[in-house]
Structures are given as structure tokens and as C-alpha cells.
Length: 82
Ligand SMILES: [Zn+2]
View 1: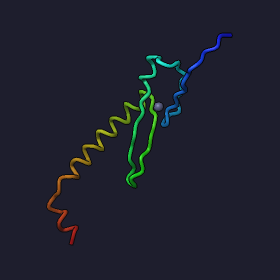
View 2 (view 1 turned 90 degrees about the horizontal axis):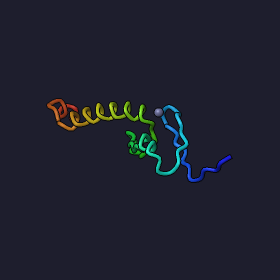
View 3 (view 1 turned 120 degrees about the vertical axis):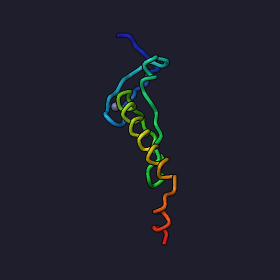
View 4 (view 1 turned 90 degrees about the vertical axis):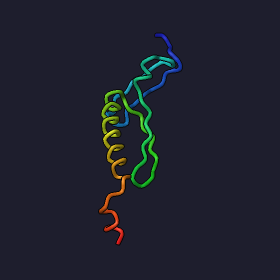
């Protein structure tokens, strides 16, 4: 049995998909490290497979849009400060 050294295991933090890949394997680009800050300010490091990363990007783009709209003050904000 052949011995292969320098293998990295990738596990998706969302769906649990996993892969063992040799160093410099082009398929390693299918795994995406992601950093996310919770509403409490905690920084989370995640690893996502391609399918989950695609879903995550859709969610993140949607949330970016909501955040950007929230950053624009509205007339109702002054009433809430009273
Ligand atoms: Zn996944």
C-alpha cells in the first residue's frame, strides 16, 4: 500500500461534507474560509464547501443590502430618540 504524506482534511462547517486533499491539489480552491461577526461582535472563522459558500454569499449580499439601507437615517429615527 502506498503512503501519501502531506494531506489536509477539509470539513464544511455547515453541511459536514469533507475531503482529504494532497497539498497544492487544485480542488482545495473549492473550499472557502469565511469570517463572520455576530451581532454580539464575536468573530467566527468558518470553512464552507462550494455549495454552502454559494448559499452563504447570497445571504451575505442580502444582509449587506439591509445594512446599507439601515445606515441611511430616516425621518422616523428622530422620533425613536425621544
Ligand atoms: Zn457545505
